[in-house]
Image 1: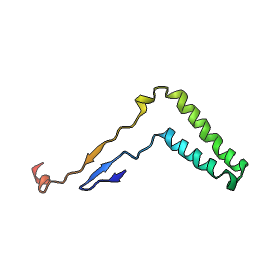
Image 2: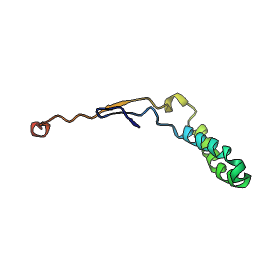
Image 3: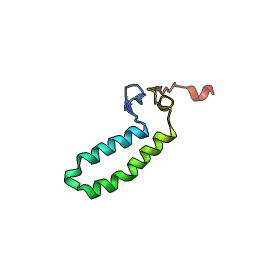
Image 4: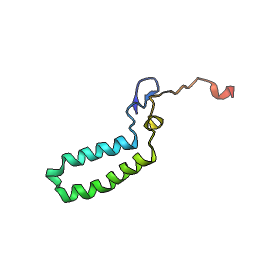
Length: 83
């Protein structure tokens, strides 16, 4: 979430669980030379299993797509006394 001024927030940077897992996998793969195959493979196994489960459970990707939204928080002076 990023602040857009005057209480507006954008959720355009929110990633799906699948996108988050794919990003982590990419990061781990890039560190393979430093951390070694055994450690990276051990860390990747549950991530890849989760990706497989997600792909089987959610074949309709369009239904799971997050939309960008804008939220406006407004504080009107004296609104407490009106309610």
